[in-house]
Image (cartoon, rainbow, N blue to C red; front, side):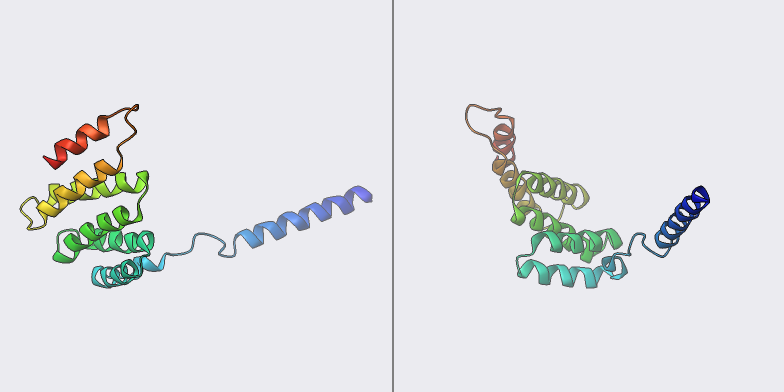
Length: 146
């Protein structure tokens, strides 16, 4: 009798766990994904003006992914790189450098290419280490500045 009661208790708990886990406790849809490139760009610019750089980078990344070859996508890619750069930190400087290089590869004849090359050099300069450490970032920064 006691064994039956324990077995019923276990089955009740397992059934409850299964029903709770199946009730939409899954992944929520990201509201950014619903935005057009223009809407995402506008919201990203607003967030960037308020110095919320990491949040703005998400909107810029989305705007670029939606329309990578349009004028909106071009602006979004550059602003995403700027957002990572403004946020600071080694990881963000690496992301910013990658975005800037992507911009130069995609749009080599852009009128912003001088600015982008300078930003690449600044990203590398921000990663320079102390004199007694590896100086490969310093050498790359000097090359980029030249």
